[in-house]
Amino acid sequence: MSAPALPDFEHTIQLGQANLDAGGLAECHGVLCGLVCRKPGGSASGFLHHLEQLKLLVNPDAALAVALTEAFESTVRQLADEDMGFELWLPDDDDLLEDRTIALARWCSGFLAGLASGGPFDMLSEEAREAIDDLQQIARAELTVPEDLGQECEEDEVAFTEIVEYVRIVTLMMCEDFCGPGVDDPIH
Image (cartoon, rainbow, N blue to C red; front, side):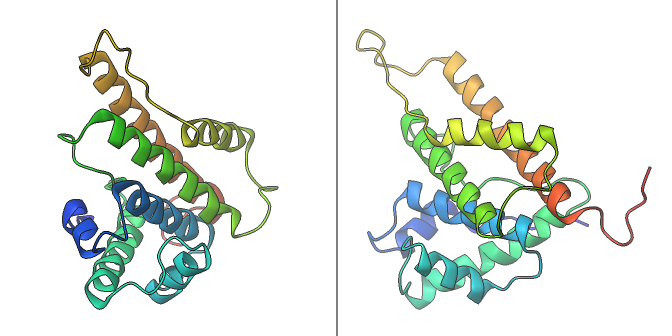
């Protein structure tokens, strides 16, 4: 199974007509991933309704609703992809590191909110509980650039990429912890 790509991030922000920024869109995707991990079998309309309840996105116009519906469908398929083709919906790599860091922090915040919508985390493994603590730390992330640097350094880019990969793997682990293996998945 090949995982479908998410809609274009920047184009989707433009569809928000200044009512949606990069951090907000990333947070919406985090909520979506948390919901799918916690309550598989949901619907795109349920996701949009959840965004309204959280006051993240109220009454999106038709074009934005279509893009978010596409994101819902792509994300569900990505999370089920046996080749782990799941990706976080974040700003492009050519955006400022500070903007991408804020978007990642908001993605994590949204993910935790989506997970929490399904109730307590009693059934999680110790490893998953530690990962939730990590995500809470990332959700509080801020980036401050020392005045004397003024430029992003390659080490910061590498660290950001590693954190994004960690969050991606944690998301897949959470889906496994909450949903368990699929009916046709072999158990080793």
